[in-house]
Structure formats: C-alpha cells, structure tokens
Image: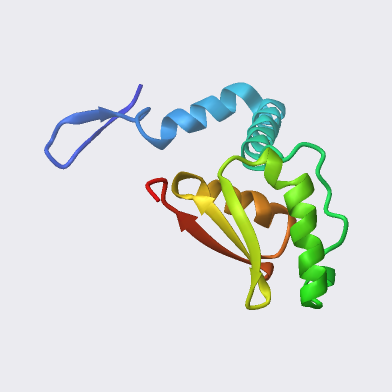
Length: 136
C-alpha cells in the first residue's frame, strides 16, 4: 500500500478518501455497479413517491376548473366535501363559501394535515383555510 506525505509530514495511506470508492467499484465490476445504482434509484423512487392517500379510494367527481366556474359549482364542491371527504379527515370544524372560495375551518393542530389532504385532489385557488383554537 503506497503512502503519501501530508502537509504536516505525516504519512497517509492512499486508500483514504476517494480511493476506497475506486477499489469498491473495481471489485464489483460494471455489472455490480449497474445493479447497485438500479437498487439505489428504486429506493429513492419509493421514498419520494409513496405518500398515502388521505382518503382511501377517493376520486374527485369533477376537476378544479369545473368547480371554479361559479358559486353554484363551489356549493356543489362544498356538499361533496361535507359528504364524502371531511368525515374521513380529522380536524375539520366547518366549511362555508366566502368571497368565491370555500373557507375551511380547522382545529389548530390539524390545519396543515387538512390543507395538504385537500390540495392533493383540488387546486389551492378554490380554498381558504382558517384555524379555530380549541379554547373557544
């Protein structure tokens, strides 16, 4: 094993640093490296895409463009959420239509969870969120 001198005059084995990675790559050869990279890519894909559905098997009846058309379609969305969505999400206190948007009132601790669940299915421009503290 070759050694080189550091600035202080101490000898450092060449296997430190990048040499260890080079030796590893030489040992596993190209096929092993491709296998290793494939496993790593699959791992990353699973880690970043495996978010759970907030409401199991929920599918919006219409897209956000449909609901943004008027207050009547917003009322339709509000009724849909009250019937098929909010009962399965903890922390929703109430909802009402205000200023051309659905105002979703949540408990303090649940605001982020409710917001992210709704925005998984619908566009943010349809909603406003307000927190209600538990001491009221």
